[in-house]
Image (cartoon, rainbow, N blue to C red; front, top):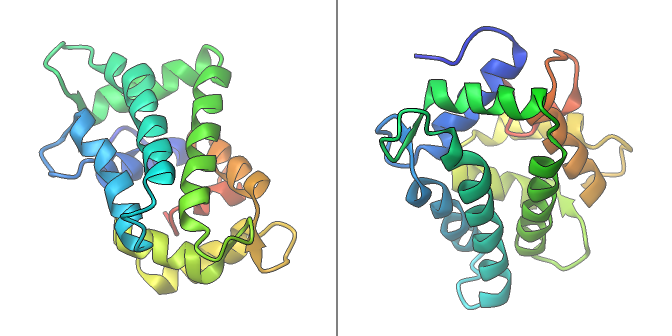
Length: 185
């Protein structure tokens, strides 16, 4: 089952499948917040509690405020159709509040994933993050990284990641670089 046709729908379908950690077809808070633990493990940062806590808080806020209200049938989980409809509704009715929460989450995961502390994500950090947390193949991520690196300097700064995140979750433009946030669709 998928959300619907179209670029945005395909992206939402993909992220739903990434987030559904137990593969039961329903998103619940425990599915989504497991990403913080995976990311912490990917960067060998289990002792870095402040950064992990910040990421967990940001993800929990997105789940509480944005994802769980999509549960139209009240069963305690959000299925793929509810997820797609919920995102479409948020986009159609002013996505800025949701996107500002995504910006907080981007800052939190960048703080954790920036393993060398230089304030940007390099290709190795980007690849490590998505291969170990979402299982995206490294070859796909090399292409994705080049698409997301808008200024061509070999790193992704916070603005490039924020822009890509916003495009991923809101754009139906098939040429938007943000479509590559998690590799090729």
